Amino acid sequence: MSTLLNEKQGLTDEEIVSIGSEYCSYGDKVFAHGTPKVFRDCEGVFMYDSEDTKYLDLQMWFASCNLGYKNKRIRDAVVDQIDTLPQISSTFLFDYKSLLSEKIAKANIKRFGEKGRVQFNVGGSQATEDALKLVRNYTGKQRMFSFFGAYHGRTAGAACMTAGYRYREPFGHFGDQAHFVPYPYCYRCPYGQHCDSCDHYCVKQLRREFEDNCSGLHNKATHQSECAAFFVEPVQGSGGYIVPPKGYFKELKKVLDDFGVLFVADEIQMGFYRTGKLWSIEHFDVTPDVITFGKSLTNGLNPLAGMWAKEEIINPETWPSGRSHSTFCNNPVGMRAGYEVMSTFEEEDFEKSIAEKGKYFLYGLKQLEKKHKRIGTVDGLGLALRIECVTEDGYTPDPKLCKDILLEGYKGDLMYEGKKCGIILNTGSHYNNSLTLVPAVTISYEEIDMALSLIDQLFTRLS
Ligand SMILES: Cc1ncc(COP(=O)(O)O)c(C=O)c1O
Image (cartoon, rainbow, N blue to C red; front, side, top):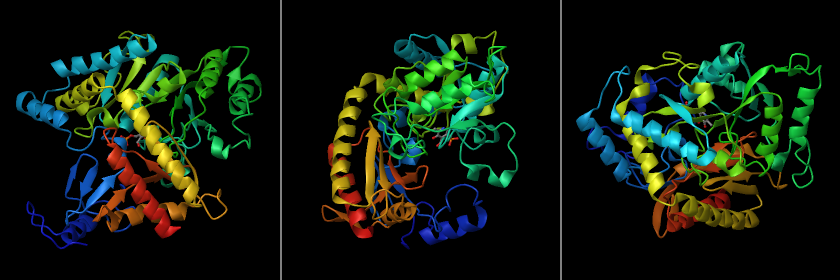
């Protein structure tokens, strides 16, 4: 690691790590892979370490910076907000809160023909919490559906909707855990079916659970279902960037409508054009009852998240003042950044450019799949892409290879156009064997070529 001095703080990388190791909690993810990497700068799709080596970032602060680092337009707006109205109590209203709410509500009228309202909070998990309270408030029920592989956050309520036991194990029993059902992960179908011929077998299984009077999901006599809502990631994020078949959610929605269960689309990771549309659920011709969002809402320039819901669920009579609130849910810097992000997306044709770049990237990945036996499959929607690492047999998940590739990318000793560089990837999935690729949607074709070259080098080195 470099011993170059950081001009501003005069700290070496070693000193930063040494102080952090002693005084930072290990409870978040910074120490997940041992000694953490230190970065000094970022711009566009790149991070820079203390030797000024550049790292192509295909993780982008876990999908929080869809418009690239140091995006000038958003930066300037935030600076202007800091110079005008940087702080305001959350009992008062100001221009950009109204304007951002209007933008999101009108975007949904355009997309779904539904009037609705928006409520903000400070992070994705808190948006999940608010959505849980909202649907409980509306239906009077507390049980929910969620998917195997789902990630909806780690606060106590959200952890009940997140599938992995590892997120709950140290903390004792979580009473309100969701009823989890299999995600349409067709490459590794949990029912052993084939996507071309299954005729939505998994949805039919769910319908059977409702129709069977002894399964516990529905009471025919009272026409009541036990669960209030189904929390859905339309493209599964931490579960490994899994794209369901086109007709899946329409079929699922029919079942939910038949049995009076609300549909909550969690767009926290896939929203704001990750998949080429404002919301990933738009690819599936379904109108959700509630949408949660966060991450790229502010392009990472101030924590802000929120939920949108149909008017009948969130109108002032049903959801009156004080049903949910957090001191910073009203913060003006976040609202201003969010307004600028939404305006940017409205003014350029991201739908077209992301679809085209996504196709180009996926085509390149398919060439790598042909070349490298240890790539089991690649897939994606827009610029949400995945590579499954597998063993020599071409199918068995290989989480070790996946992690080794991630860490190799951090070393910064790959080569591109005669220069040393690194790559920042992310891992996830049901078997911890997928590299999930989350480039800024502003990535250029040249940078996609660079990404493909670096990924090729990593698989050549390690497999
Ligand atoms: C789909 C989804 N929902 C909720 C969350 C939780 O968001 P946060 O980390 O901001 O609390 C995440 C975070 O990765 C996510 O991907």
